[in-house]
Length: 132
Image (cartoon, rainbow, N blue to C red; front, side):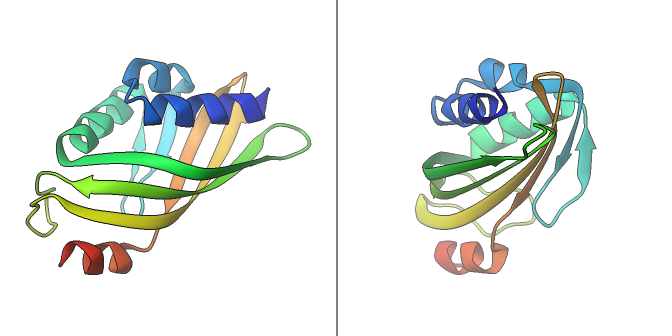
């Protein structure tokens, strides 16, 4: 079931179906943003998704999902293919630059939902690709 949950989460991401993505999360989900802080709760995650939708168009490819034997932890490795649409706060100007990055994500799973999402990618490589 945990494997299916993580695959459903990424299918919702690729479909830009934010309600379905949020439905995969616990109410108190912890979201560790790459090279950023930790945000707590579905409302904070929803606001993050709104910012992402405004600034980026992304899709996940080459998804590999791994789940611990007890179903409490998961990981995903994938390639993100994106377009930088609108400048995000503190980042370089956007003018439709394309980028491709390997990403690692780690999850805590609880009661059939995702309780923690931690994402890692190479920000220096992303900045190089978008001309920052």
